[in-house]
Length: 307
Image 1 (tube, rainbow, N blue to C red):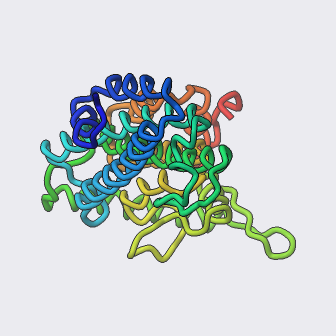
Image 2: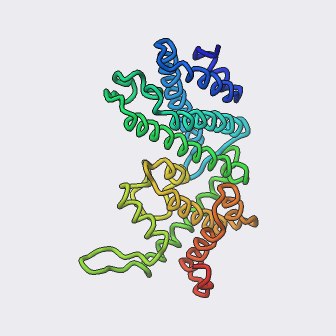
Image 3: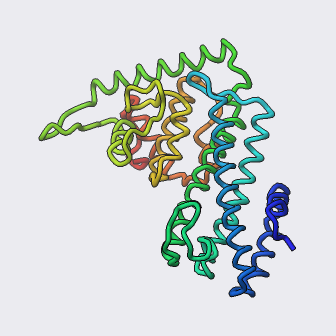
């Protein structure tokens, strides 16, 4: 019987999620048994706690490798990111199963008593479903973050160590990027009636709209401007963790930044195509962002079919 936390942890570490699910399914036939319900409640609590620990571990690992404007990732850290990503995916599998089964005998929300996590005294199916939806959404966001760091590392854009030459190269790129967009803002910023700001630059308009919806989106100690570009790579990556953020808006900003990065670093590879392939982004969407990027950078002969 797989009925102890040590056994669940061991199965999770060995990617044996099927064994855990088989155990849960075997208990589902015994719903109504007090011992069974207690086991399921304990398992639910274990999933929640393990997810929280794993998410914090990923955040600490990734952002502790940030220095200045960029992130630096050696082989051991890259491997650790991969392992944490696999654990989060396994937990997401358990979360998806639990969300589908959330109506079974208070399965994911204890036994109808106040939950130790959210303190909800109501044991209704709707409450349990809403609670597990939040857990599910948070796991997906952290998986997205891990995949982004993984992609950045695979493409060779994250040096192993913050060497002076690499730091200077990244600083130069960011300065040119910032100056370019500041110059563009001087020519495109206008005012509508009643003093409302109007942005003709796609990227500045997107960032401004997200600010209105979610508050300041760039989270950084050095951030004094909520416009584009972001204050550093860490702030850009944290964009995927904004609660209830629109995924397409985040993808658009990421794609725009990748085009900027490829341009100012003079990358030979098609980074945008690599990014879209890794994250299954439709070609029509990426072509649209590329067209807007070209317009923002003064290329006025962009084919209208791309828009």
